[in-house]
View 1 (tube, helix red, strand yellow):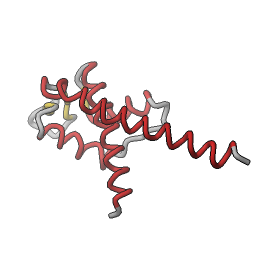
View 2: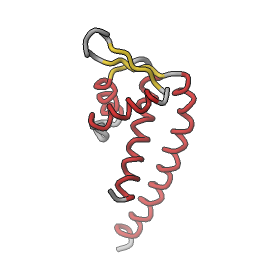
View 3: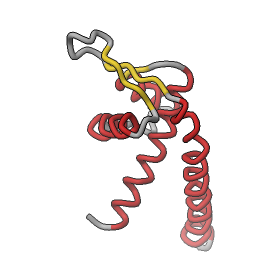
Length: 120
């Protein structure tokens, strides 16, 4: 896998993690509800793949940022996630990471627009 693919995956993971933190800051939610909320908040421009979302939720749970509990412990029903104090403390770090990347992307878009579209 190339560095650009790893970089893109890292970027998408950071954005998704920040959305997870924000959504869970509003209250408990299960995976499909989190995915639907991300789609809703981004007017369907960001559609989290469940093959990436659930592993990220698992990683965040392992790191103590969120807690997941089965809605019905005796069956594999919905897993309800809540944010922990550690997750709340992690939000500013993830925000800064996303902010820096968005600033870089804005600069790149400006350069591309000027070079490719405005400079004809």
